[in-house]
Length: 487
Image 1 (cartoon, one colour):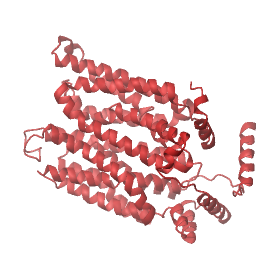
Image 2 (image 1 turned 45 degrees about the vertical axis):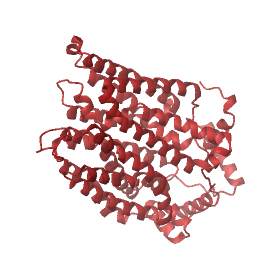
Image 3 (image 1 turned 120 degrees about the horizontal axis):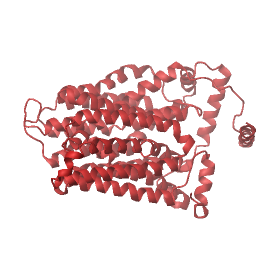
Image 4 (image 1 turned 180 degrees about the vertical axis):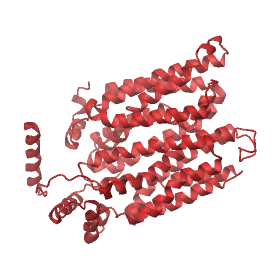
């Protein structure tokens, strides 16, 4: 307690020296309206998550010769699978680079409503795409191009306060995984048309209800709309007094007046800035190189290739539920164990079951008699892969990418790192069906396992710990990185 008081006093003195408003206010519980606002916005994240697993239950139908369940009327080819699965990831890259800037101009709320309508119509178009593979690809690309989940993450950060920003920020990853889960649950039991409508349905509720939500207070203040900003704060924090709202407004003003500006060129002007970009990208690169996101895209077909008695669609549902559970678990343990330890443990742990899965697929390819005794191995390997991925590489990388860069380059760094990461995901998603068909699934899975092993070593030797450190301490750590003892 003494340490906390001392830290509090130190920060208070620093704020007084920098003319920051320091009047004390008691921390108030989050209002029901704030929760309702957050949960309504998360419907965008959930719909995006469901769209990312759309291919898993649908590909089984598109591979079929049965025209009653295959809307194409013929089995889909490997190159068509690659395009259908990977192109939305590519357009998502473009969207992440462009759409946040557009939301700076038109407003977060207005952009989200427009993007919600566009995404809703693209989902409906996907349902009515019928036998046109081109229309399937185009509508899925429109679904991801809006990058509405990225803009909502900005909106979320701007409506929250310091004490609840981390909690509500974790909901992004959880709702994304819930979307994955719901996509895998409904996909196997409905036609492609009905399934497309189901995963799009949350957007209808979002478009209708989000109209009553306030605009981001930060956006309003940036554009000189102080009265509207105060009204938005009143709606979001209705349990505060007039004086407390005024203080919140003053803090926002100070924050905006002293907000550093950064450009892409600034990433390379200083060694510590470039280092921040490289170190923030490293775990994200390993996350996508682990192949777990690729496997989830093709989860049902992937497991069907194992040739066990279990249905790939049913296994996909079980695995998705386990993944959600471990994402939630990670949000509770990350502050206790630290980012670096969880990331290294996650990468190392993910490599082992991926290797064993590769062994199974290899034995299957050579028609080994051992396969009859190893029917349990594919599901076991998959579950352990998801468990280890879910405690580190999956959820922790999101926070790591945002907290490592200095404030003056944070926005451009996060945009660049996530866009580059999405390009890596696009490349792996595009190549997986082609390599799996030409060389065998075992080589794909071993490739993923090697990536995780190399990644663990790189993180062990080069990745510093940021847990419990302020942004200022992280910046000083990067300045003195060459003298840092990483352990």
